[in-house]
Image (cartoon, rainbow, N blue to C red):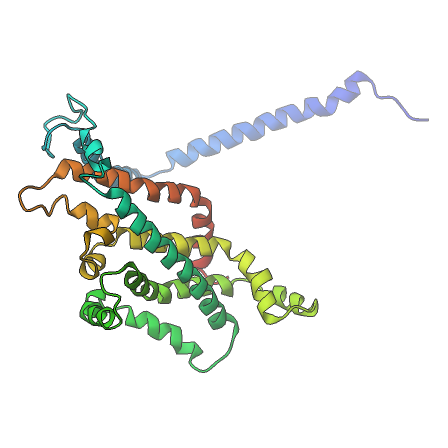
Length: 316
């Protein structure tokens, strides 16, 4: 026979657990209080100094951006204003930037998009194959080959400007977007390959061996097993290449001298390089507009950036 418990017996365990739960919560609260109270005076001072440093850095980053936004909506040709909030808000400078008769910003953005997308896509293809070879294959020069490429990049890029100029002029690619793509394509491959190699090193070889057992070739194992797992790192490489090329001014200005081939960075500088005046307000409006594509790209790929950087920074 199954004995039926009385209501008092059924409630007894719960009643007994209630004081214990209260004690546990009370002990946790007292533990937190003791932890806060256990901070010494020097630790509290260090904590507040750290907070002040963080807020100071945030202000240093926000103030220039706020100045550019204010200047872009301030009427006239005055960059520096006396008040944080402008008395009159005007969008005349944005109208000047979007006016094709005054500013060909559409052409500049198109040129930047062509160079960034083609270079970044080709760079991802070359970096993935190069990193996979250094990670999985054994060949002569494997140990010091990639390190030698990294050491070469220690030298400033400006040292190669004259050589790049003569090389592009010799192959008739000077002052062309094609020549700019060729130059940028070789610039970031060593570092990106090293970063990508660290990511591939963390992938277990058992995945490829299982694919070999199922009859896959080496290329099929790379294409169908390894590449899908490296999407976060490929996104990191692609975005870093896009941002670096999009913001480049020095090299692009050195190799491109035709207004119709300007990228957005070189084109915006023409506002400040005017023979008769420096139009800071139109430059501020153009800078705000040019920032939007990068911000949108960053927001769309944020989750891949975090996972890719965290995994590629260490060898798992």
